[in-house]
Image (spheres, helix red, strand yellow):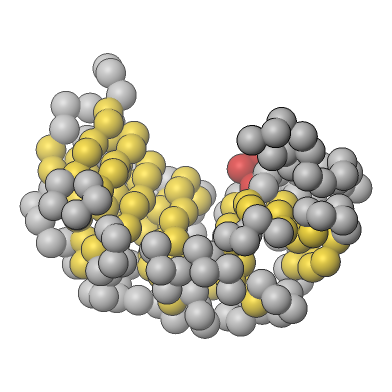
Length: 212
């Protein structure tokens, strides 16, 4: 880990004893004190203290679940979400204990996002399905949402009451977080939608598409 002002390292070199999953290669805690890393074999994750380079938490799914597809600190630093091809789980970022049951998913996770206040966590899958959970305990929020194509990107608005999705079905969609229901008709685009972004006030949505 490097200091961008001085160009100097602020941590020792941290060497993992197993292969790191590139999609879960590192998530910095909000206080910049720790980094979470996910692994390929067995799907576990570890949290390292940046100042010392020591492992302080070991998040191990039982049984092993294959490659980790995401490990993410919540914006408030209280939770860590782990994402696998078949499940999502939430962990206490202080003691490394699970705070939710295993939350099964069917499909490959393509994108994941916390709401800015850390209350909610959303995942979009390659089969067009998506889910929002409470990060506190893994409770499902609203109903699962659905596109006709792969969900490529998700973003919450500033207060977490809405979220927008991008899909390969050539649409974007704005949803109500509490219910999982659409708030607009699908936003039609000329090709696959890769990225979506709310304006700071939440009034507008930017869509970025792939040329075909």
